[in-house]
Figure 1: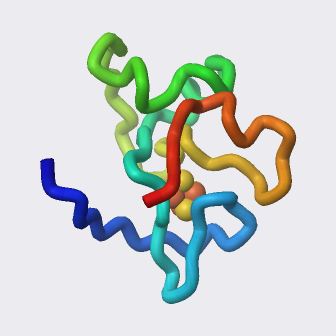
Figure 2 (figure 1 turned 180 degrees about the vertical axis):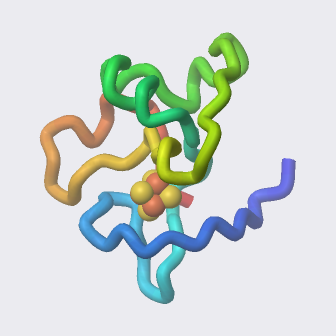
Length: 83
Ligand code: SF4
């Protein structure tokens, strides 16, 4: 698997945000807002292949499920690591 990912992100209070507006997470899960609002933090990349795809309709209804605030006690809940 290619270790070079290029996810650009401007959400600077996320634990995975890094200089140059880049995401430093090894992988992320993008989901619908509804999914993000109803699923716990542990539902993230690790189980992505088992999840049921959903329609969003507009970019306004999608979110990064992997987002976690810097310094949050929940940093390891999603089983995602930094590059
Ligand atoms: S995990 Fe999501 S919100 Fe956080 S830096 Fe990466 S893309 Fe942005």
